[in-house]
Amino acid sequence: MSTHIGANKGDIADTVLLPGDPLRAKYIAETFLEDVTCYNEVRGMYGFTGTYKGKRISVQGTGMGAPSIAIYANELIQEYDVQNLIRVGSCGALQKDVQVRDVILAQTSTTDSQMNRMVFGNIDYAPTADFGLLKKAYDVGEEQGLNLRVGNVFTSDSFYRENAMELFQKLAEYNVLAVEMETTALYTIAAKYDRQALSVLTVSDHILTGEETTSEERQTTFNDMIEVALEASVK
Ligand SMILES: O=P(O)(O)O[C@H]1O[C@H](CO)[C@@H](O)[C@H]1O
Ligand SMILES: O=c1cc[nH]c(=O)[nH]1
Image 1: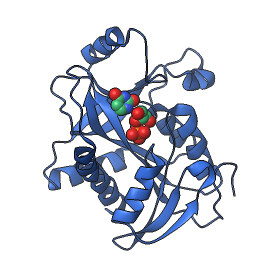
Image 2 (image 1 turned 90 degrees about the vertical axis):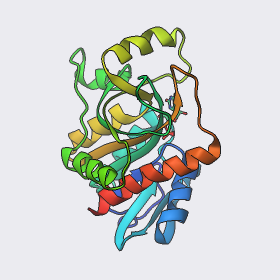
Image 3 (image 1 turned 60 degrees about the horizontal axis):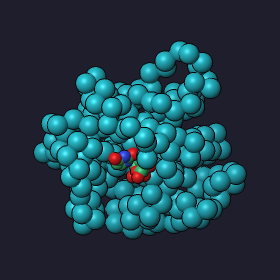
């Protein structure tokens, strides 16, 4: 057992999908995996292990924000020796040509989070997706006919930010595709321990237009993202 995960060594697979929402973890396990066991209920942050097309895969909720995902990424790597960490999250679009329901592969991330400043001081470290996972996910998306976007996402420390539009417009000007809250921490921790990480994100709302998905639509579109992550895991 680690501090926040109540699993025994060996209970967690080499590859773990990481949704922010623990109920999305439950949905993924129940909908896509076979022979599922629940290995974690600590803090209601569900973790499950099952098989997908015969390969052992786990899915672990991370909570929201860099500090929370950092707890789970650190413990999954250091206590359970996880090799591949694939976030399956939602995000808000910052570009006019990024549509609600699009799936984004985060090639890199930009952040206002203090977490990397604590490590690197004034150096601007560039958190980067694992190229092998990124390529596999991109190829899967192409095969499935999805309009995948690949690029820079903003990992924000604040969901409710004062004067947000000014910053979002600046980020959009510099080709940042969308805003979410975890990728920078995930990529940085994976790099430190020489593990593979990728964030696959579904656009749940549009910052510029205010368009939002319904809960039913989110479920369907999230399925595209989940299938991209699972297929990339077994490719
Ligand atoms: O849907 P998840 O994976 O939680 O991701 C996004 O949603 C949360 C905010 O509502 C943040 O965690 C953000 O990154
Ligand atoms: O607008 C959004 C949507 C999802 N997640 C975020 O952090 N922001």
